[in-house]
Length: 189
Image (cartoon, rainbow, N blue to C red; front, side):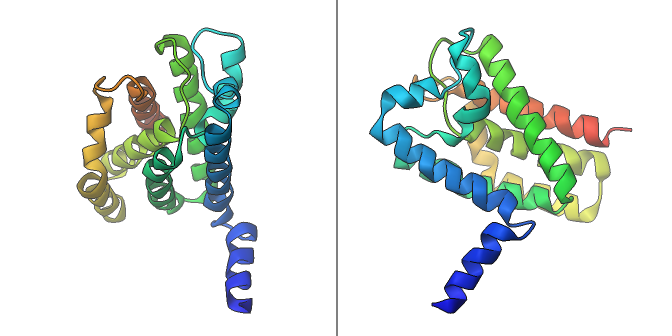
């Protein structure tokens, strides 16, 4: 029991792990909020071109409509986020903030009138960032990471198609674009 407690303490108090553990915990709490109260979840969502929807720029990635939504977002957040952390904590923080805020602003400006929630826009941003970093650096570890990302997560590109009404394909698209743009800003010399 002491080993488990010690592991959990390290997970939430030591870098680089807390950069993933705290947001993951917030995602779990956000899923509970989404399940308990659709009204509260909507108030915390990005709702395009509404003043109230601006709150979602900061809260929407953590809110999930149901546990299946959380289950679809949590593993890629942890894996892709972990791959991003290889490039350093400062780079991870700046890229994550730029991706999250950038895709949220684009979604608020150009998304369809709906309540957009979930971490998937940020995850698509992580995906794009990892691929673009490999392109810009051409370093073997980055190329291997990008290859793995394409093999294991390339199928998520199907989420860019506007197939289902309840899926924010716009958030996915804007996340991918901001991830690519963020890598360009950070690595293109």
